Image: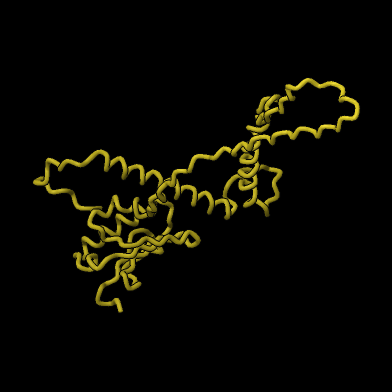
Length: 233
């Protein structure tokens, strides 16, 4: 566990509540994303409950088909609830007015008058849709790093690479971790192992920026096994 704060640091410095709220929102989004990934992994392994009549070898297809069916019903619901008298509005066209001259029999020997041309209907310009506002792209955040940042105030973790197929979480550490005293480094490793277990990972590996293994969770029992720096080649 991290060392207790020095009593001389109290009272705690002021922290902006809006910044804390933004951090909490990022943590909630990251937690939801990890939960969805866990459900997807469990569904692929056939670990989620399904209906009794469903074939066992097609267990991974049950919940995706249910989700697709519910989405289709929600998409067709507005069409089914539309009023029966609904019609698209029609654009009225002007009607040609008849000539004001009286119509009577042509005198004998008079040449027939040509028909009067009908004025063309005025062109109605199509309605132009208002220009769509261009929204800025959403801010891309690493949800796993956002969760681990709560237990890494010194910024020792530079990258987190989850491997759900192996139930393994690999953390890449900065060079400042190698400069820590061994007892303090072991405390940080135990804290990260506890956090990884809370996120659903069965094992944890710590590597440096060159990919060399610094420590891993014990295969038998619990806790972390840290390797001596002199043995890292």
